[in-house]
Length: 150
Image (tube, rainbow, N blue to C red; front, side, top):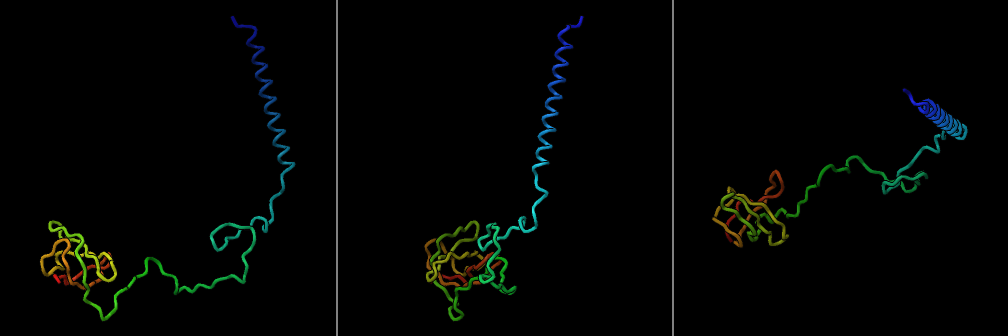
């Protein structure tokens, strides 16, 4: 047998659902009535300042910088610290692995660390050896060639 309270609670649930639905419709109508039709184009435009931040004020034309297309460098610019007359360099071997066949030389003048491969070594070298070498640009940067003991 069915419980007589079941019918009453179903009716109550239906009433609650209808009340919630009416409240939702009422809120929707209020939002529509209070909403603006949209902003003008001037209100929607944002500008970017010289630091990359968004701002609502237009930039000052007096502060405009002119950048030529030729001045833009993509990637890392090449740094040439060597003078053309100074091809021979002096340095100290800071690391050398005989089994792998490579190491690094600390340049005495610029204190740069320069890669050296065993194929470019004329005399046998080890760590803390004083060497004379030339610099050539390899695929990954400067590398020492014609390395011999000083």
